Image 1: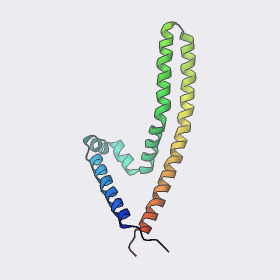
Image 2 (image 1 turned 90 degrees about the vertical axis):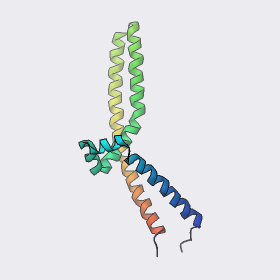
Image 3 (image 1 turned 30 degrees about the vertical axis):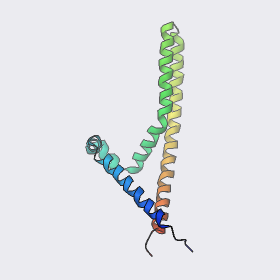
Image 4 (image 1 turned 30 degrees about the horizontal axis):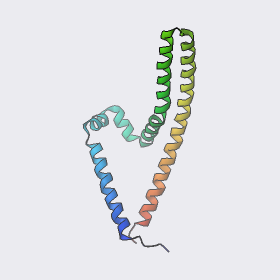
Length: 135
């Protein structure tokens, strides 16, 4: 049937739970977080955790393409000072359209990742509660 866990594993889990609760408490007591959560946007996101997770994943995965786009804009702006004004407009337009396509794709990927994360969380929490429930 089910194997008995060594006592050190449950002690490690309790220690990890203490550390995580301290981390969560420090984030929740941060004055900037408290001010944001009192704003209308913060209250809306607090009531819609899936949307919040999707937004967080989208921002995280879109940081690199946006950074590359800004680098492209700076480099083409430097080229414009040299005299390549028409090329700059073309490159920024193509880059902007490419960025739009990439960000739309990343939006869908963020939604899928958020769904996978939520399902994984539910499955793992159910398994943990099943394994460590008193019988």
